[in-house]
Length: 166
Image (cartoon, rainbow, N blue to C red; front, side, top):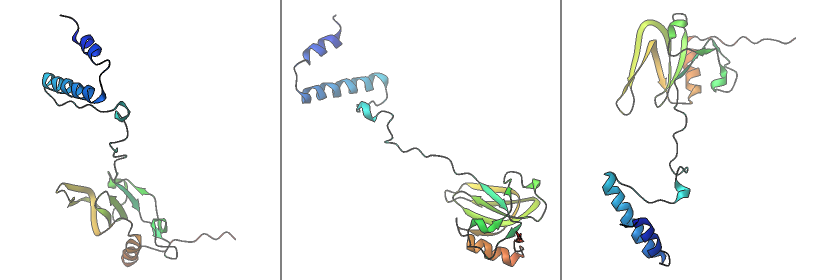
């Protein structure tokens, strides 16, 4: 038997677009049946194209040790003074250190480092999260730094010491 693909190519040489699409559909259906999984015919420009949006970087958990606060500054994250907290091992920070932790899809947790204690909570999808060596005092939505600063003032976090340049 002759190579069927060559025969089909010769037959389709002078055929209109609709007929070629019908034959292509039959071929795609035959391949789907043969491979036992659905195949589709798409334009080459759409292969690997950005039609499917990538999720980008996965949001990460982060934290900040709050040593002091500049109460005179605008109530943003920049008013919080302190180093980054190791949220995966809070035992690297002293006991009773005030820490703010951001948990993706949950928000900001304000609390203290307490060894051998675990804060747990649930995501909206029902999965559980935990932060070891941490006791949460209050939870805030993302970006609610003004509320975090107000609560820190109630907890007695000191005003940032200003360094004079004169």
